Length: 369
Ligand SMILES: Nc1nc2c(ncn2[C@@H]2O[C@H](COP(=O)(O)OP(=O)(O)OP(=O)(O)O)[C@@H](O)[C@H]2O)c(=O)[nH]1
Image (cartoon, rainbow, N blue to C red; front, side):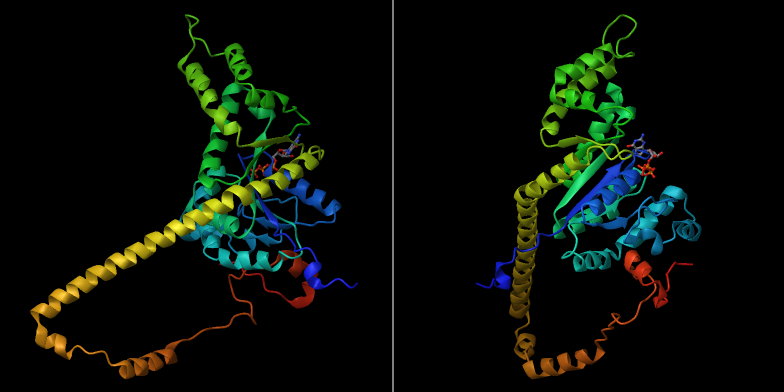
């Protein structure tokens, strides 16, 4: 019996991995590692670089913000410092993110993973309107997971560990997306201590007590010590919502565990995030509907008062549908839709890998200035 096309399994949407982390945590090396891992599994990902200031990228991006905005030109033009330049470049890029989304959507039948590398200065992405717009746009189109990259050797002191976890916590509550803590550089220091501190809060408090600088001259716990003790209790709840894996972007250790966690996150996205965005969308639509109904009822009341006051004017106030139709036809003449699909235009996003594969097509790379 021949199988019909409807019997074929429906291709799942690609899952998007947004990598976020403190400067130097190893985001770019991690992106390069997972990209090469996926290539080795015959599942090449679609990669987006959102860091306009990166000097060297150890992987090939399909879409690179640097092809669209030159942050140094932005700095000059708007008289900004480096951080302002990077933020403004990201803002400019975000204004056309719909084009990026449609490029990603075009590839969604052939790729299983979309990977985003974000700017080195973590706050530029996590605390900017652009970062939120990009995250929301991606997450409402594709299953999305945040991979929070941590420099394990630099997180081995209890106070640094706590600060890093608080930052991760703030991103989790801001995005509400499935979240994976990626303890990187395990070739230098294994991440067992971190897992122990996350699962056993007494072990963390013990480490805190034995760590220097947590007692004052009289041997009493310092203010910082008490604060961190209390915070560890608060974070206990937060840890329950997280997956944590250890990887070495240098050696490639932990890749399978990372992708297992990504697979589990897809389920979490579907069962938790999707209902949440649908609830938010329904609430927004209801609020809009209520606001419209309210303004309509106020307008009708005003009209009634007006008609009662000026009955002679109300008598002349007649709707002439024919006149209106004529006006509508006149309006149509002004509509001027430009179809740009045939030609490239300055500022258009370019799929870099495609362009490179067909280097002889004479593609002009737009760079402002
Ligand atoms: N030993 C070791 N070093 C690593 C690992 N991952 C990254 N590094 C090193 O850490 C440094 C920072 O790595 P990057 O990938 O540039 O870090 P980043 O987070 O992208 O840094 P920004 O460009 O500031 O955003 C580099 O010297 C890497 O070689 C790892 O798993 N093990």
